[in-house]
Image (cartoon, rainbow, N blue to C red; front, side, top):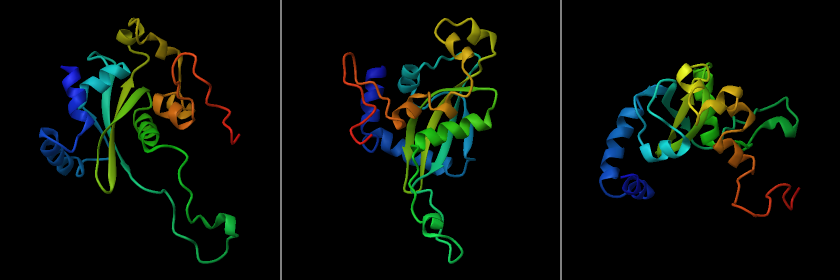
Length: 183
């Protein structure tokens, strides 16, 4: 089943997923920025990141504004460096979404996240959060490692954070990415 779900999500603008997505976006635009949901929209992606339908794990949908995070140019009183015309964010929108979810649920740790939808103005990501103090998580052999970490997302240790930092592993025996040639 997961194989067919992955195939469907490869081209979300085609087939049955297109009509479903349009109806979802109409509803999601009216929701708050961070919304807790009952179950993942992309179950195959969530399972690949470590999601399990058990106590101590929740899924949150986060809406992020797309585009540059720049402010309008001040008229006077600044030197050119501080005019703040265009400073593209060094973080990906996915990483920003994970941080917002972590701030909303301070007792939880971010396990990972994945893209769900985007339109001209917003992008939506679903973030998997784990309660490191829950007995079901402490006794779980696959997830107990997260009990020893605090603030993973703010230190760039989630998959989205590692990708933004240029630490993507390219397989066994691959040449290391950092320091880069420009370094």
